[in-house]
Length: 326
Image 1 (cartoon, rainbow, N blue to C red):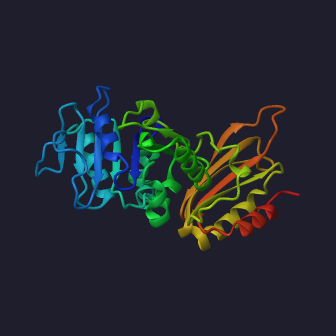
Image 2: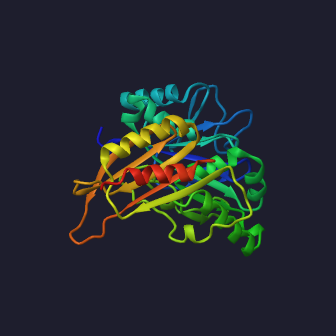
């Protein structure tokens, strides 16, 4: 399928109590004209308020505003496959999917679903991973739970809730900490789930041709108090890469460090290529695509960001230097 014909999917994640359900309820209640299938990946708790979704023995419940809720009772691929089949037959009508993960979930396996299954990957377009962060409790959660760190590490965008319950200084410190962990994700405050839909849907954060957003001030503040398991680093070069060398090096590093690589993404200047190359990966799967051509007179350069758990930065940097064309 062409990308414009694929069904966009948003993964909504965030630690327990961060406000995922509040945001989802607001999206479902708003009169926006979208028909949304909701896959709720909850365990032992009611994720969406009872007054919005009618309880039923059926797997799929149609709600008042034309949205659809689907409770995960098995494998995500099977659920997405069932939705696809019913949609293709005309039994269901929806034009996007939102997956709400449980508060203790690592969103990595959910994201990987769209790369590991050919049928699902060809029908659904992973639009973005949205992570909600509770400004009042996030510092403690990030200190104590690696799941909270991974949720930040995977984010294409961070929505920060409960900022009204803490001081501006506390918000500032938390923003800086999140930026160090994931410099590519924009951070926006959200109050009681009240976020404009254009800041939640159709972000194309996972799209290979999306603009790589990296905070330009990221490298100016190295010293910090927290020793987070999830960290990030950015590599930049104004020399072109040798394509064969780079592919060989990255493939080798992924074999060794893939389980600890949450996200990696880059815009590359490749020797002999008139167009920039955009690449990204999740854990041990990476892919690339041709981006727009380099403009005449444009300064060519490569920028890569790696987000993961205790990655050997020096080893990555030394290896990447070796892949530069002579």
